[in-house]
Length: 222
Image (cartoon, rainbow, N blue to C red; front, side, top):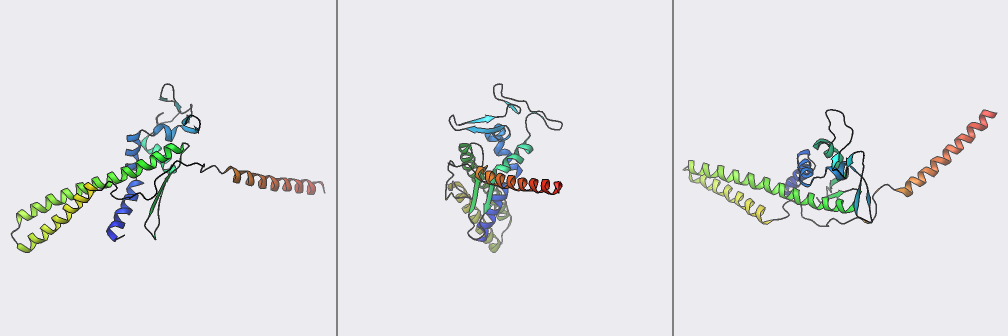
């Protein structure tokens, strides 16, 4: 990718991880409950298990205990912090390819959020480009009207042409910054916890503690 495309990609990644963008994403899709109150997922019914001490599913009210300045309903900042623990965005410096992944109790929600994040960041970056291009064209047209120098007018018309191309590309590309190479899928295996690894470590730790206990008793008797 050229320098301009690379800069646009880097900016898009930073915007994607920003508090403002993620906050608007949480608000738009109302992710407070699945992010802040979920404690598990039922495979049979494909439904979330909600922590009753945090959120009452029957009355649809937040019931968690919170001290000021916090309230029973989590704030945008709290939800952003928890959501960022579920989101991973990385870029291969060699190829420039970007990998986005989402982890959640529900693999279906994780896939849905990954798809929507790509959709929303493309839309956000396109709107930014459209606004900047329209403002630039308006400014350049004003400058053209104010100058009579042929060389200056030619340069300004050239800049208007470039901004018009930007408008055209922004309007026709659905995937404006990120083009999907490998679409998100519903995971078949759990990402964590690694129960096999936990069992192995527990056995090893138990064995070490047992040996230590035996040695302490042996030397204490002597």
